[in-house]
Image (cartoon, rainbow, N blue to C red; front, side, top):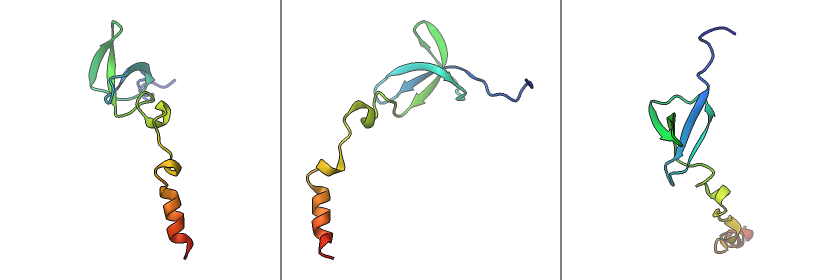
Length: 81
């Protein structure tokens, strides 16, 4: 392998800023901060959402079809045209 052309692939600590959920995985993400997790120091990457806080994965996502009949109102309004 050529030297100096490959990204720095290492373990990185990801933190979900919305709920504080932390997990470690391997990544090439560039970071300037570090944090300690389970007794070991890792480069830190901050996330806005993760699978722990995203509505699709947590089951709190609402369907458009059952939000007060909005789809039915739309269909009724434009069915005449």
